[in-house]
Structure formats: C-alpha cells, structure tokens
Length: 358
Image 1 (cartoon, rainbow, N blue to C red):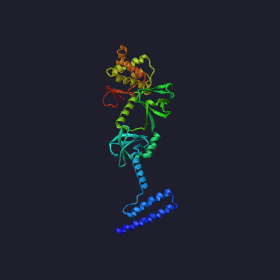
Image 2 (image 1 turned 45 degrees about the horizontal axis):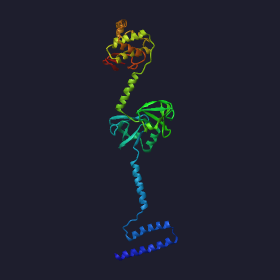
Image 3 (image 1 turned 30 degrees about the vertical axis):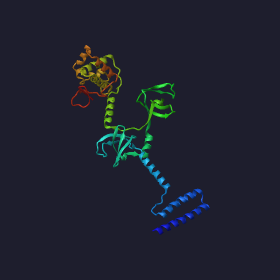
Image 4 (image 1 turned 120 degrees about the vertical axis):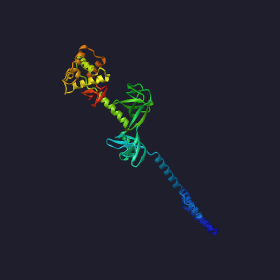
C-alpha cells in the first residue's frame, strides 16, 4: 500500500513539472491560473481518488438559479381573473353540486386562497368561495387581463378635498368631495398633482391628500345581490311617473278618495292609493282625467256609494291626504305603475300597510 502511494506521488510530481513547463512557454497569466486550478483538482484525484472534481463556478451558478427560482415561486402572482362572457357561479365547496354563495361577472378578479382538483378558492371583494378553473385565468394571462380592464382609483384621505380645474392650488374649484370618496384616476401630472375624472370632466387633486390604488371589479355575495335587487325594485317603484296637469278641484277630489280609501293608513298607504289613480289617468286603458277615473263604473266603492262626494263637500280631509294627492299628481309613486289595489289577502302584489297593490 505504501509503495503504491509513493508511485502516485511521483506520478503527480511529474505531471506538475510538465504542466509548469508548458505554462512558462506560451500561456497567458489568466490561462495559467485556470489551467493550474483545473490541474490541481485532477492531482487531488490522483493522490486521493475519493475526492470528486468540483466546479465551484458551476456550483455558484446553480445556487443562484436555485435561489432565483425559489424567490420567483415565492413571489408568484396570486391574481386570478374571470374569463366568461357574462357571469359564473361561486360555490361553498369545490363542486358543481355545492351551495351557491355568490356570482363573479365578466372582467372580475380576485386573489387565490387555495387550489385543488380543477377548482380555485378565491377572494373577490367580500365574496369568498370556489370557482371552476375552466373559467379562470392565472399568471401572465391574468395579469394581462387585469391591465386591460382594471383602473387606478384615487381615494381621498382627508375630510374634504377640492377638485380643481387646473393643477394649481389657486385654480378654480369644480367642487368638494368628502373623505372616503373615490375617483377614477387619469394620470400623474407631476409629484404634486393627479388628474381625475370628475363627472366627465378632467379635474385635479393634490397628491398630498389622496392615495392611489389599482382597482379590479369584484364579485357579489348572494346577500349583496338580494340587497341590490331590493334597492333596484324600490327605486323602480318610486320612479317618478310624470306630473299631470290638473285643477284645484281634481286635487281635492283625489284627496277625498284617499281619505275614504286610506284615511287610517300611513302616508305611504295614502300615497299608494293616489299613485294608483294617477297611473290610471296616464294609461290609455282608463279615462284620462282624475274625476273620470274615480267615478268610473265598478271601480272605487266609496265613489259609487257617495262617500267621496260627501267628504269632498264637507271638506273633512286630512293634511296628509292632501299631501299624498299633490305628490301623486306630481308623479311620485311607491308602487311603480300599479293600477289596482285591495285589502290584503290572497292576492300577490306590493303590500303597504293593510292593502296590496298591483
């Protein structure tokens, strides 16, 4: 064993001598160092074959690649965008049979919370639930869509903020906005001013008092959908139907009918009765005057039995009935275009106090 080791050492020394001779003859300084380094590794293997050749530069490069890959994975976007034409359902669990918890609309986006079995659990606004990957975009595709459909929102961070017509503290003011209001941003004018869309006009706000955030439309929970639909229904019911020109006698006559039909009801009940009469006046299916509608055959019982005439004559009409009559004549309504009402019972419709309207 000792003899064998001596042979290896002698052989190594011979190689070193030959290498140094070559280096002295025609190698540059840089080449000498590289050659010597590589030769040293080879010699170490000859002296001790158990030592493997190690390329330190390669290891350093691999380490850098590995670290970059890990960082990239860590920073991988959690953005997800909806890729549908209209809308898609969001479920409580990752299954088509699971309960529906909300809706995501075209161009909506959110953040990934979890992924499994072709489904993604995501947060979009107040909506949290599972959506099928079939209708979602991830990674670069999601970011590209977000850039196309998203917009920058300017959020006001002071009690009130002036919207000016020019980027100047002395410029004329468009108006004032309260804190927590938001505006769509147009661009950064400079370090001090931001241009915004203000009712279709270009306005300017001081950058000192606002914050800018990137906004993507969010989905809706079922509760939010129900609340929105109810608000829309009420708004439609209360949409002004248009004023009708009448005389003072017609106002008093309508108030008298309201007194007879809803004198004990709340103001909403009184207005609803007046609105029904005026909806009929506007409709081509009924007479086009207040008296013609009220005294039409087989319509309002108090008008047929003479009660309306008596109340009209004696003038015992409450102020609230007069107010409701005037409001209805001016187009106000809380029953939309309803043309009928009756005491609440089996008929479907809009229930106000003790009567139902349709």
